[in-house]
Image 1: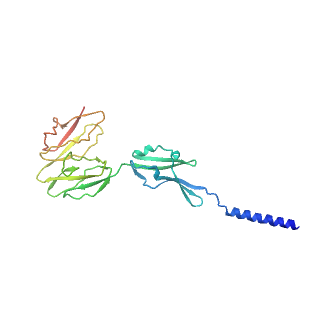
Image 2: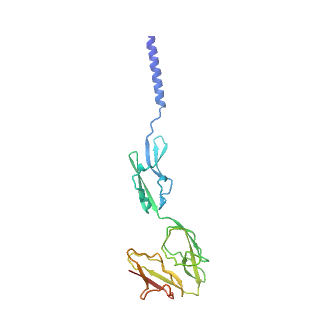
Image 3: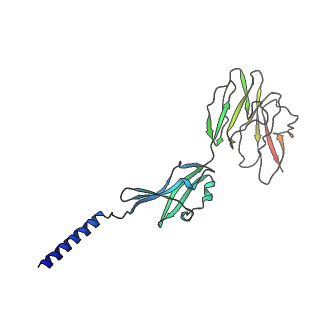
Length: 248
């Protein structure tokens, strides 16, 4: 009887110990939610995409979070696509889950400063392209174009203007008594971009835009609309004109 009682006590103590051990063992963690997160804006400037800015986030059933670095063997996307402007999907495979995050690659943004030189003020802008000619005015003066330097040398700026760096634009003015004429450039081919005119004071020469190109063609000359070849070294602007590109 005594042995039976002792055995019963031993079994009871063992059961208590096992119960206590089980109650102290944490419930295994499982993944409740899983997705890709980023520490940068949804819109990324072209050239700035960096996969190290992205992680896989795991939200566990116990409320804790875990972040996983995205390694090469997890990628389901060719990262080269993020060097092009547009909307692209970053696809990652983790723990047999295919995760996707939409990323928008935008043109680079640059800062434009305007020196209006006594004209109405224009605030600082940030953009990848200036679509239209910025408008400023000055009492008793005529506007004579935007330039990239305060000496007003080189060709006047035409718009739209695609930016490749931060720039400062300088407004040129001439006395109100001096007429200013508009010189339009007709690039003369289908789907050519239409640019704003240059503003040339009476009796001055015009400088042709240097960026003009056309695939598989070379620029032969510029012709005065309805007339002969325009000589940029000699001809002076004395009225509103259109110069038409001739290709070869």
